Every structure is written in structure tokens, then in C-alpha cells.
Length: 297
Image 1: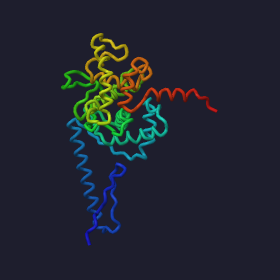
Image 2: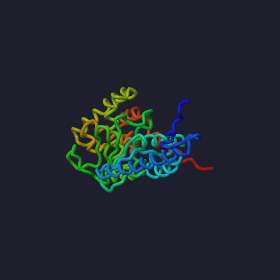
Image 3: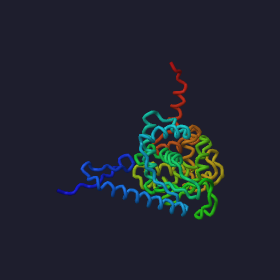
Image 4: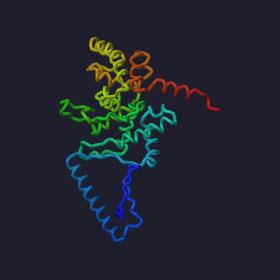
């Protein structure tokens, strides 16, 4: 008869749990606990070495049932988009945010600056906001989120920046990420802007949106040319005129933060974005307003 394994490893809920076989001889338990203790010590040493190198990394693993209540309270208090969703959509939003959070690595790039569960949760929710209308959770090239407490100097940009997107990673100032959601109608949102860049980098790899993206390019190009000539869009901020990719990222901010104004001024532009994202923030906002006017019996 084949020997039974000493233990099973279960990861169904994002945690590693050990289930010992009922027939396991008690003498072996001592060795199992010794091995577990040594592994824990080695992991602590690994964490300290990471901190010494300035890379305090974390790959999230949370039990969804215990996480959901806290996430609902935090996200609803910080993200007005979440409040536009109905009950079923909110449940799906939380589920997708949870999956995104556990798929990404979050790294502190400052000594003494700790990445918290709140940071991981809200950045993941920002990504979820962008891809909520898609089957995909996040662009396949995005693996890591680097967090800074304030603005930071970028060797790649050779400037002080609040956020930056590089292949495989997005870099964010936590201070300015929070400001993006504290003022939710100024058409400036660092999280949405930088994460929109990660989508741009992978856009043509999504067969489902190639046609919509071509349509967006046709609609957006005249607006971009007008901005380059006049240096004033009348709707988008000046930075959107830097190049087409920045126009894309800035238009994403506007889509979520000023949908009524966006549709009123540039209806075709708004519709093209709505088709790509498979979302309609304007319809959600109007539905919310209508519901608020219905008298309670």
C-alpha cells in the first residue's frame, strides 16, 4: 500500500491550511511542527532582508468572507462610483476587487512607509472600476504596484512625478491617489489615469475591443488635433494634448468623474469610450438621481 502524505495544502480561500491525516503517528507531529517553525523563521529573515533593500513587498491573500464587510464600508466611503452600483453589481465589484488584490504584488518603495490593507484594497478597487465591464480583471502585463507616500523622482521621466506606468508595473503616490477620490468631480484621478495607461499598453491584445478602439481613435483624433492647435480643449485639461495615450488616460478620468458634462460636450467621444469599457457611467448617475427623487412610502 502506498504511503499516505503527511499533509494536504488547501488554498481555496487564499490561506494555506494544514490538514493532518487522522492515521498519522503522533511521533511525526513533532517533526512537522519543527519544520513549520523553521519555515516561519526563514520567512521572517526574508522579510527583513527585503525591508533592508527598500522593497517591502506583499502579495495579498485574504479570506473573502472576513474581508467583504470591511471592504464594503471602506470602498463605499471613498469611492462614489461604488455607490452608483445596484446590490448585485456591488457584490460582483467586491468579488472582482478581491481577485485583483490577490493577483497583484504591492511594494513600498520608501523606507518606513508600510503598504497597508487599505492601500491594497483601494488601488485594486480602482483597477476594478476600469475593467468592471470586461471579463478580464486586469491587463495581463500588470504584475506589481509600487507605492510612495508622496511624489517621487523618476529616473525614466527625469522629473518629480505623482505616478508613472512602466512595463509590468504602475507607480503611485499614495497621497495623490487619495486626493483623486476625495474630489470626485474635478476630472483628475491619479489612480484611474495611471491604470488607464496599463490598459492602453495592452489594448490591441484584446480582440473584443479592437473594433471599438479603432472607432475611438477616429473620434479622438480630431479633438487631439484641435487641442494641439488651440492648446485649449474647453473640456479636457491641457495635459491631454501631450499625445494620444495621455488623451486616452485623461478621457478615462472624465468618463468616471464628469460623465454628464462629457456627454453634453463630446457625445460621440463619450459613446466610444462607453463601448470600449462596456460601461455607461452617465446612465448609472442618472439612474441614481432618479431613484433619489422617488418618494419613500
